[in-house]
Amino acid sequence: MQARERHSHDLTFRPEVFFLGQTEGVGIDRDAFGRTLRRCTIRTEGAMRPTISAICVDEIMTYDDGEIQNWHWVLSPASNGRYVVAEAQAGSGHVAQLRPDGDFLISFSRTRGWLSERHATRYAMISRDVAVEQTQVAYFGMRKLSFTAFRRRLGGPGAW
Image (cartoon, rainbow, N blue to C red; front, side, top):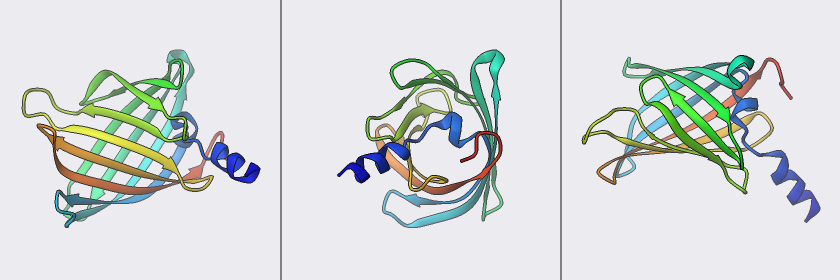
């Protein structure tokens, strides 16, 4: 039991650690019925910005249909396992949470208005340098698609 508890503690997803430096990964989009829509490769570059007490993460997702998505994140630890999060297109003021089981949850809309899609994302560590990401995207509370990705830390400052 002690080994299990220790193992679980070691695998807490901390975005300010995991995304520091570079990561690479692969992901897959599935429709509401579980059918594969497309696949992508993922690269991130993260750097601490001490002046704002946050990590800034640039993320590039390159899909097999040619689409390239750029995400620009700023994550700042708050209190009680919470983080304040901003993304270039989603805006600022989003709150993410580190769960007691070590998973990291964030929910946001990247677009504004009554047709905006809602993203609910959960990150969980699989090993000391690999994480799984599971995202549900919904319109009007109905799931539109799911996204699953595996990401690996490549190192950099703070690497294990």
